[in-house]
Amino acid sequence: MNKAKIKRITGTVIIAVLVVVVCVIGIIISNTRIPDNLSPGAYRAVFFDVGEADCILFHGDGAVILTDAPANETERLTGYMERMRIKQIDYFIISHYDADHAGDAVKIINKFKPSHVLMPEPLENQRGVYNEIVKVTTEKQRITAKTGQRYNKGGVVIDILAPNGKGTESNDMCIVCKISYGDSSLLLCSDIDTDAEKVILSKYGDKLKSDVLKVAHHGSRYSSSDAFICTVSPNYAVISCGQNTFGHPDIGVMDRLKAIKAEVLTTQQNGVIIFDFFSDSVVKVK
Image (cartoon, rainbow, N blue to C red; front, side, top):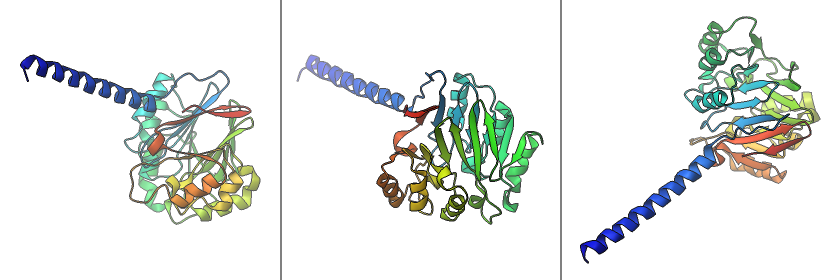
């Protein structure tokens, strides 16, 4: 084969490789970019892809609510908030003190100066994390979350459904909250287990019904009982998870969610997941 022909073939191969690379990059960008075209009058829920952790931002013109800030995983959150010109958080909900939920809490508090920081009562082995948060907040900012509390901002209502009483482990003290805008709602279950679900069910019953469910504990088999899932009866179920050795999400949990016809989305497979909440409907954006 002469040199000219080899050169032509080599050039063709290089071009083909470059085309493939460009296409792959385009797919990656389209799968990870967070849209910023929020419709007037809507609130947006953004479930960030933060691996085996939780980070959810609910925002619109009237309110900014952030739930959790996992260790070393808030760069995209911060970038998005800056792009959306969000300078302050109204309610920062720290569901509990594990690193995959509260590891970057101090960093977020320092940058976005939340008006209110909702936290559970810490267990003794969580005092270190709790004290670091106390150092960067005022008594006026801090709220100890308890079941039955309700907060309203910009037409958005936050109902605290847990913790209910004392616990012996971190997950026993998780904040569970329902965020409602008109007739549309989002239920955030943090890392609760089936025992906590039973208590919440007994207290709130049909009030748990929500359009979108943030599935408890990354889809753990120790959460998401049949009774709980059926009562919430979501149209969409979001599981925030990443590479892990715990078997998350559990096949049984996935099957129970699919059995009630919920559309199941995981950050591991779908990347960032986004919904727009209108007063009478919820639209999946991504």
